[in-house]
Length: 232
Image (tube, rainbow, N blue to C red; front, top):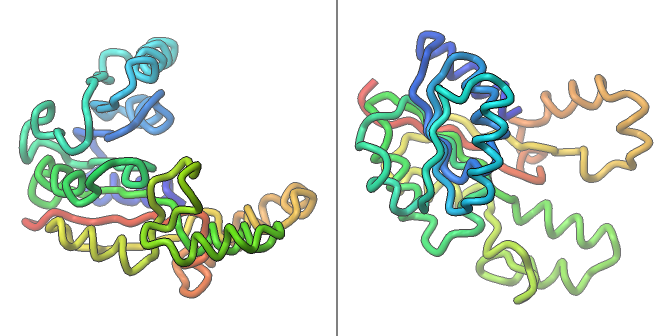
């Protein structure tokens, strides 16, 4: 679903080449394919090891000249990316880990040119609650539900999880106009692996149909939002 939304956005902006910033883009799972499609991508990540892997991956793919690796944090994006310079900013699986999600989203919005788009991907609290309950961990499910940040306990690898309304409000509070919300992996983490492997095409078709339809969208493992900077 994420790639479908990004592909549609690229077409909306004229097909490219676009100037893309990938916040927390790590080893380049999105950056390298985007660069291979002709776009210029700056990956901002706090991990030097991840950026080293990104550089190798870009070189192996023959797109090193279109990928720039920058060590930095999302809330300090303005120090490494000029304001109003990006056509598209990716912020995937970042807000769950940072101190101040609002500060990161404001930095993302500031980096976008007028009419530019932000692609935001976050972990969904509802999916975590259902997943723990279905595996018999009812205490953990209750803790996830009750905790104000959607954490199971202090050993949780994520600092927070989001509900649909909460992350939508964060995006709009950062000054971005919310255009789309999709669920990612609505069913894939709930059904037995044998069912998924038996007919992956049917699963993909059903996932696509459910991804934008509440209430199914709202129980997906992740929530994908597309927000737009004012000006177009």
